[in-house]
Image (cartoon, rainbow, N blue to C red; front, side):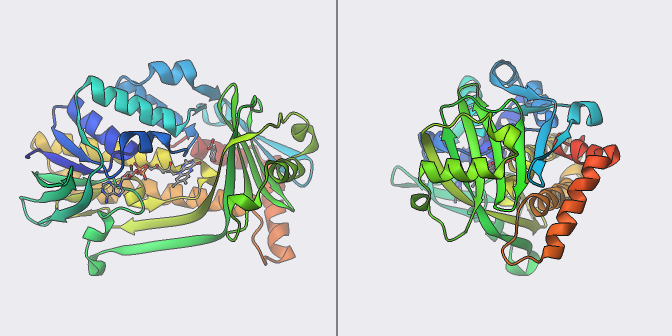
Length: 388
Ligand code: FAS
Ligand code: PHB
């Protein structure tokens, strides 16, 4: 097969890139390892920056997003037992955020792929990238037991943190920056009405987060040990821990119920530099990982795709400069977002073995945020997403 851009991975980054390129007259073929139901079944992010909302609207994906998404003008942070801090981002940063699960974003992208007849090849294995430093790169893979080959002008590596693309950049050309956090998030879904606002909490027992997916589907998280498995966490233990970590006035509002999904995710920060090598360009988790505390993983993938799609459009219009500068351009937002996610993670979690001094510094940060509208504005503008 031959195309202009071969895209590895049909998660949010790959599917969005293919859709935008198609709408701008550029052909692509997407090569995805998993089946379509498998990708659609993953429970991941829950919050869209307003910048992401506007991009999705611009490509015709605004209708369901506004019909089923829940617009929020603030989030709350519980700390110091019963203190509650409001981060009013509509008032402080002039933009809201939208609670709209990644699962729905993925459904919308695949529905658009069907409508616009995009070429996504699911259940592909043994994906290999070839000749990425030449003008004739190609991708080989196996599907239905047959080896396939896609000749292309460019390859977009959108295959996530465990993909093959990032490793196609030679070790001596690739720098990996990494921070692993000494805890994970235990997340559940329950068919119960969520709190009116997203609520993050820092408590002596650890972090907790109350979020949502729809008016009768709540998403909750508690910080847990990396040694834990979901079997260590009965529903009773989860609800007891969650309620104990929230300010009392908020804990009283939580409607508990049986979990219909329960999973543990480790927290990591990671950046791959550069995000391009020869005619290979990385976007999304293939290039960076952020702890979910800042609600940035999905949004940063969308931002990469914004920059990369603009660069491909310029290149095919005879302007190669944007594509040559893609990595430099994308990394500015990546590092700004990685710092924000790291900072929110340190602010809101308790680190095993940390000193009482560390906790006092954390409490001073939270007290300063309570006193200072400028400090709250800084969180607000980063949480809802800086302009591209
Ligand atoms: P993805 O990982 O979503 O997609 C990559 C795709 O490439 C996958 O479909 C994969 O099957 C495919 N692939 C991999 N290797 C391949 C190969 N060799 N060949 C072909 N295809 C291949 N973000 C938040 O903002 N909030 C959250 O609460 C949150 N929770 C998360 C929980 C978990 C368990 C994980 C893993 C991530 C979470 N994230 C969260 C981050 C998540 O939303 C990612 O940022 C987002 O999925 C990034 O999208 P992609 O870059 O498309 O990567
Ligand atoms: C979620 O709804 O899954 C969610 C919300 C906010 C976060 C992380 C996850 O910071």
